[in-house]
Image (cartoon, rainbow, N blue to C red; front, top):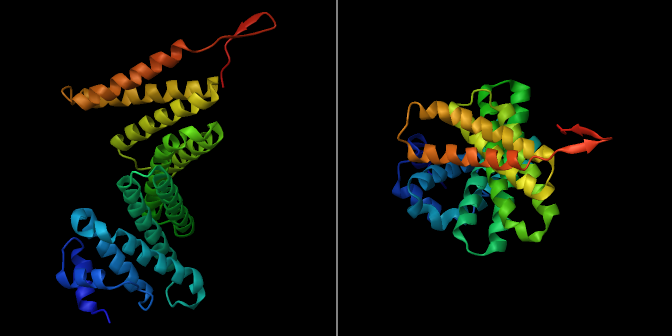
Length: 286
């Protein structure tokens, strides 16, 4: 049996490393005999310790994912038999998917095997999307702002991870690459739509990611629509970064980002084509 005091004490302090808790994680191979709340607490504490002390938890990532999945299976199989409210169950489900996404992404960076990396990244994207969609549904039903914020965070993470997948599928043909570019762009847009309280820094990073995705889209489609997206997002990055630059003129990284956006804008403006129709000079706008 798991002693509630050991778990609750560690759950409250989150980042505190309790030797009894670590013994529990190291010796337990399954949590199938635990209740759902206990599984949530164990995995939550494990995730927080992993974040602060990865050297201690890295060898346990597969086990924590397994614990998360046991919780998800419990919810799927026994959804109607739990005494928890529907809201509590779906909140736990979203958190478990979110935990899995974080751990799977870490695994994707720890292997040199390209196929394993792609598999981990795809699983990461799928877990992020599940966490985001559940939270989006919870917000629609209960109108609690934390659900909207959680959904926005996971849509953004899904977009970022999908962006990394694009380069991994570069050699598998344009169709597969285009699939992930569109998915990443759509997920980013979803994140922006869900997050009405973005910080200025978040707005800049979102525009920067949108610019990168637009470039990757244009590399495949070679059309004016994708080109205009590059120019638009590049200009947005420049405008927003310059406002920050006024307060931090010595920031080297900031200068680099502004220069990159300026170069991208200039490059694709030069490549803008002019089309002719029935003898009349006409610039196509989409």
